[in-house]
Structures are given as C-alpha cells and as structure tokens.
Length: 408
Image (tube, rainbow, N blue to C red; front, side, top):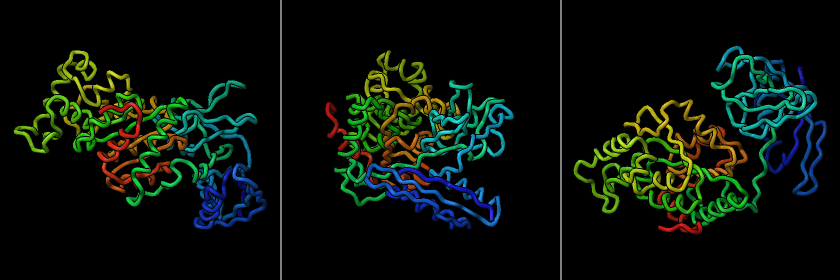
C-alpha cells in the first residue's frame, strides 16, 4: 500500500493531538505504525512521534495526510511548492488552505513563519534570498502571478497548546455549558483583560444589539470610557439602537427606564439613523453636539477604533456602516494584529465572522444566552474559544464591577 512518514512534535499527549491524529487515520480508512515515540519527561518538555501512514490507494492516503497536517502533523520535510495565481482573486488548483494555527513554510532550507495567519485563506511566498517571506492572503486579495502555496509538503502547523489547568481559564473548559460558576468565570475574564494590557496587547469587543435591548449598553459604555477596550466590531443594529437610546431613551421603541413601549417608538431607530445621516456620520454628530452619550459616543471621544459591518437586512444604514462584505472583512482584518483577548457578546454572525479572522493564539470568549452560538463558533474552526452561556446584561454588569476605574 502507498505510505508516507509523518512527524508530530509538541505537547501531543496532553493536548490529545496524538490520539486525534491516530483516530482520524483509522476513521478515514488508513493504517499507521508508530516508528518512534519520545515522551517528554516533564510538563515543559515536548514529545516527538514518527508515524508511517498507509492507505489502499494514493488519493485516500493524500486525503488522510491532508487532514492530519491540519492537526499539526508534518510530512517528510521538503520544499513548499508554489504556483502562480492564474488571475486576480483566483488561487491555483490544489492550493494550501490555511488553519488559524501557527504555520510555517519551508523555502530554500529555511522555515518562514506565515504572517497574519487566519483560517480559510491561502499562502503567498514573495521576495528573494534573505528577504523571502510568507504571508496569509484571503482569496479575493491574491494578485495574478503571485506565488501561492500548493499542497501540504513543506508546510508545518504547530498544534494547539494544552489547556493549562493552572491558567485563569483552566476551569472553564471549551464546551458550552450553563453549569459553571459565572462570577468566577467573569473574574477570570477581567483578569485576562488586565493581563493583556500589561503585556501591551489589545482587547477586542464584538457585540450585538441585544446589549442595548437588555439595558446593558450603559455597562459597555462605562467599560469603554475606562479604557479597557481597544477596538469594537459590530453591525448597523448595535450602533443604531445605541444612538436611538442616546437620542430618545429607547431601544426598539421600548423606554429603557420603564420597560414600556413609547407611542410611535417603533420609528425611533429610523429617526436616529436619519439624524446621523443628516449630520454626516457618527463622528460628525459627536463633534456637532448632536450625539452626547452612548457606546459609539464613547468610542469617538475615547479613541476606540470601531468597525461597523453591514447586512442585507439593515435599515438605513448609518453612513459609517461598511456595506461591502469584502471591504468590511478587510477593515476588521486590519484591526486584528496585536489583539490578545477577544470578547464576543450576544451576536452569532459577527462572532463567527471575527473568529474566522483570529489566530488560535488569541484568547477568545463567547458569551450568549443561547449555547448554539458558542457551538456554531467552535464548529466553524474557532477551537480556542471559551463559552459562557448567560445573559449579556448580567455578564457586562459583573465585568464592569470587576475592572478598575469603571464608573457607572
């Protein structure tokens, strides 16, 4: 039978990487033989395994090796193969599809780290000799003639680190569950935010409109004003209802102080959009004194970068909303470098969209009252995400109480 050698290095026992690779080989119809297995003697030592993988047919073996490689297995070292992109926005057939794990490609005997790694993209190699570099490129941004990585040979993926039980997130686990001590979890998240800032990393917040509907907007605004969030990703809905709250005291026409629907309140979000459009945008509305409070007001006055990505269902939209999906992705992509912690609260689509852009090294927390949101995020490849199933108002209220300098 056709066969090939695979190498596995790292904390492959504690992270279950070895067992996952062996299981997938058998599940996909292959066989394996462990030729060498060096087990790390201490918690800091890495382990090393050499496997011979075989399958009845060459295409089946290639399929097995491809999946194993995405779990951190490395094929016999060879040069990474590239082919020119046949047209703008088109990869060559057989291109290497990236994961969000740390990746390197071998060129001229050197391993080149892939810059700005994210999932579901391609690899482009450029430059000559010592100036040669590799970068991650989304399909719509590749240029005709660029050298695109093809196949798995010469590509090395570093498997995820084991989840350290002594870490502040150690007791959370990755699965979505309502059966967790929520106050302890939120205390750990607050500590992670503080640690990120001490390390010079950014904190990214991804939010949905339920934050405003539940009355939790004031907690998010206070956290922003205290300087704990460096970038905000959201859609037209969060911004619109935040501005509706600032101008009319309602969200979806419901008065937030009393919980009662106001007369003609269903029109308030449209009138809020119209007023911002007339002012020339959110920043202009702040500068003109039209918008005097709220989450977006805090972003403008405190220098917090924000990206509002549009949807087919948007009313208006606000003039600051990026309605081209590819432009919105690129705008979000530019804000990802340097992010150490990402909080995704009460939004499914924006959480998944952001998760697709984040390297696996970013500590990611998904908070939603529906466990399906967390599950969908992880099913689409954001395996580093921790899930917390709870109400966004409770979460933001508790988080605000645990971060220094937050004033309500």
